[in-house]
Image 1 (cartoon, helix red, strand yellow):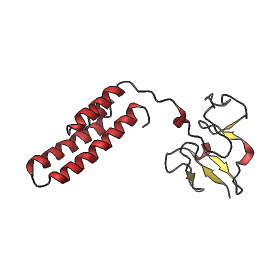
Image 2: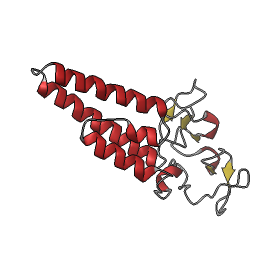
Image 3: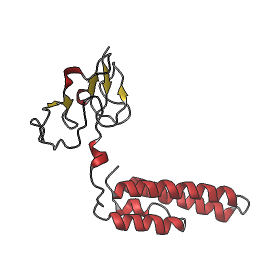
Image 4: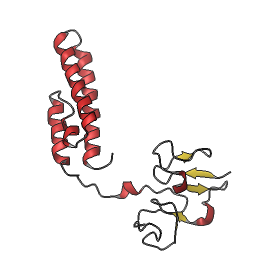
Length: 167
């Protein structure tokens, strides 16, 4: 039975599915692996359009994407892993706001700088609730600090991913 391996994330796509459950990539772009573990047709599919690429081609003749991120047959490629890490516009500002104000217990400003309004408002709401619990009850200081630490790391990771275009 043919197995389908996602060309984006490398996870196996179930036979009955039309897309990858992990990243949403279409099954038509997936690598087809036969029972012996070899790629069907012996060709490497383009990570962008899924059509076969000639062995020594530098660009896909179907969609024009550069193929230097395509690996040997049987090894799924993840082109986004090999792209250079470049800060997006407002990325440094967003990371600065996220870390500086996040350290002070005010979360979501980095998301707002990256124009992710709903996530920014959600994190601002979480910081307001966190501060309310901290001020209203003096007994739960340890719990509030643990929650605050979790929120800080979560929003910092998200803003860093946004700043580098990984999300």
